[in-house]
Each structure stands twice: as C-alpha cells, then as structure tokens.
Length: 104
Image (cartoon, rainbow, N blue to C red; front, top):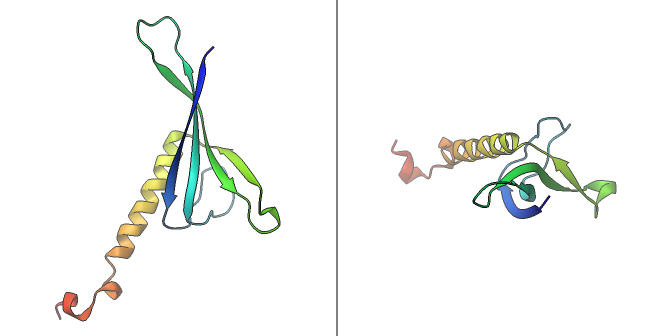
C-alpha cells in the first residue's frame, strides 16, 4: 500500500476549541498533517484520506513538546469557519470605527 503525507499551515486569529479535546488553544499558526493512501486498481492515480492531524505545541511545563491531535477534516473546517466569523465580527465593531467612519 502506497502512502503519502502532505503538510500545510492554518492560522487562527482567535483562541479556539477542537471537538473531543478539553480547553482552548491559543491563536496562531498550526501545522496540519494529512495522510493518504493510493487507491489500487484504477486507471488513474487517486488517493483517499486516511488521517488528519493538527500539530499542537505544548505550553507551560510542556513547552518544547508538540503533539499530533487527530482531527476530522470537517472539525478543522468548522473551527476555521468559527474563527473567520469571529474575526469578521470583530472587524465590524462600532468601537473600531473612527469618528469620520461613524457618520454620526
């Protein structure tokens, strides 16, 4: 069975939570590792995702350590969507408007 791994980086602008894990994770850049296996018997090359992991760096007494947390693709997309929604909400705050933008 042929496997491949790809890495990418996602950025959270706000603290966030992941389904199945306690506590908040801080805002920042996180590496995502995706493992896929080659589908056999096809006339073209195709892969099936077998696992997705989020690399979480330790804090406090666990600083310097990192952990791969298994996460579903849908949970990751949902967490990123919540983060983008929170960022947009913060960008449209009345408190953020200058007097010229306020229009009152």
